[in-house]
Image 1 (cartoon, one colour):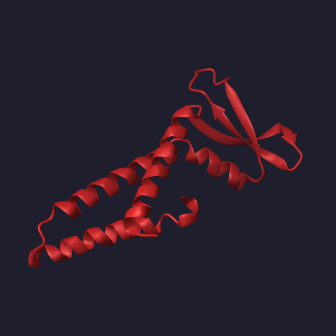
Image 2 (image 1 turned 90 degrees about the horizontal axis):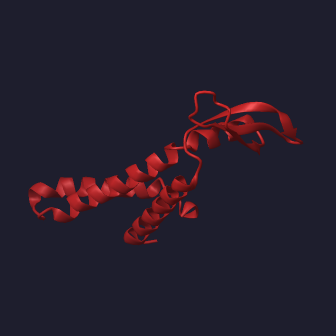
Length: 128
């Protein structure tokens, strides 16, 4: 896949993550075991709404504590990572494309392209 194509696919994926983030239940998410277990799913991802009494709980049964911990950790974090990826790509591309090509700019041009490549490599094609 060409660099510009992959950049556009990453941008689209980040936008989709941000759109999904708007639809999720907002607030702090945490994990714990539950006595209302389903067979094979001993952990539940729980959301405690931002209420002083903390009574508003939504649960989704998940197999394995590490899976539950990962899902809970993504609440808010995924949106932040999508926003930072979009901003980083945008700013690096602006910097690269606004440079006047000259001997003194070659190293900075190469560094911009290296940063772009590093971002692209961190997004495997199967995630897009």
